[in-house]
Image (tube, rainbow, N blue to C red; front, side, top):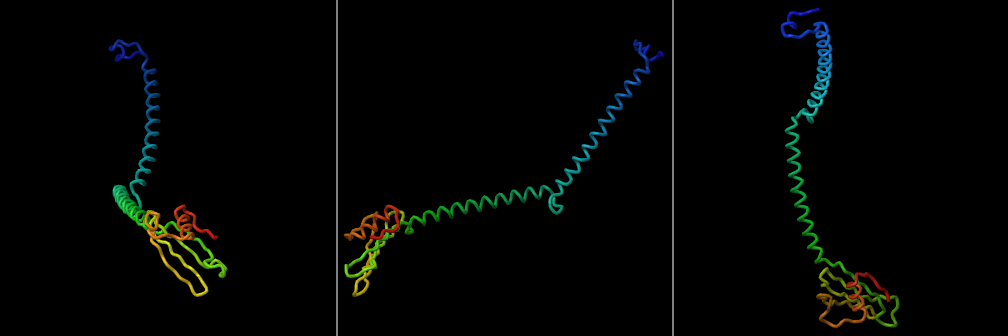
Length: 174
């Protein structure tokens, strides 16, 4: 079949073939359109659910609330870090090193009722507490320790207790 339009354009083509090609092209485009509309509707449904947020609040409010929470958490973490630093500094002054030596002060007394205990902080400063048990009674006295040394002479048991505290051991029974 000849067409006046095709003849005027200088083309010698059958309009039926052109119609068939255009119809197939239309069907392909229609199928693509339906597929895209389905994908769009699923995406829109997901977007609507996402934007609704909790209890129908807007997503922007949710995100801003999260930023506020993050700021609060940063503040709390910084405060906790400062408090931990203060605690660590305070712990340096607590008595952490302990050395105990039990002994018999007198031969007639048994049971190792006398003892020397050294209590030192992280700077190796503290005191030695010495308790001497005898048949007449119990006598307790202290000696100051500065930088791991005593300005007053120490007895053998006191020296042992001090060395145990300096080494980090806790008790020794002689």
